[in-house]
View 1 (tube, rainbow, N blue to C red):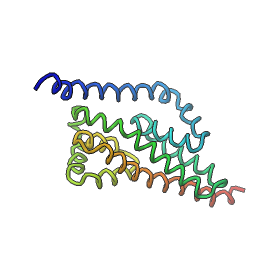
View 2: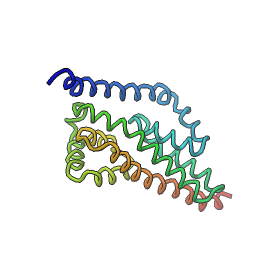
View 3: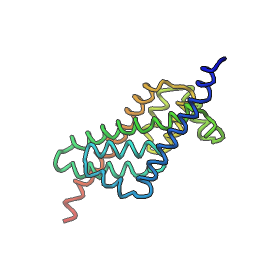
View 4: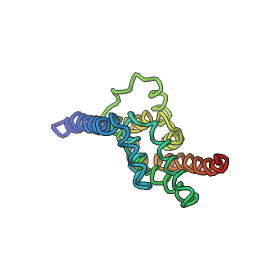
Length: 194
C-alpha cells in the first residue's frame, strides 16, 4: 500500500473530478451565459450537429437545447437531402452525445460522493449493476436523466468502451428518430402554411 496506491485511490479521482468541473465551467462561461453562440453552430450542418450534441451532453447545463437544435438542422436539410440528411444528423449527434457523456462517467469514476444520497441515482446504480449494458442502452433512449446513469456506470467501473458504444447506439436511435420525425412533420405541414 505505497505511494502508487494512494495516487490511484485519491489523486486520480480528484484530478478527474476537477477536470470535469473545468469542462462544465468552461462550457457554461462560453455557451451558458451566451446561448446564441450555441445556436450559431446549427449553421454548420453535420459538424454543427456533432458539436451541439457533444456540448449539450458534456454538461447538465444545456441538455434541453440538443434535441430542438438537431431537429432544426434536420428540418433545414430534409428538403435538400431527403431522409438521408436527418439520418446523418442523428448519427453524428449520437457520436457527439456518446463522447459528451464521458464527463458523467468520469464523475462517477472519481467517486460516488456527489450523488450517493439521490434516490434516483441509487435505483439507477442498482439497475446498471444488475443488467449492465441493457440498462445503459434503454436509458440512453430517454432524453433526460442519463447523466445519473453515466455516473452509476463510472462508479461501478463499467468498461468505458462498452459505455461509449452502448450510449452511442441508444442516442443515435433517439436522435435519428426525432430528427426524421421533425423533417417529415415539417414537410407535411409546409403545404398548409401557404
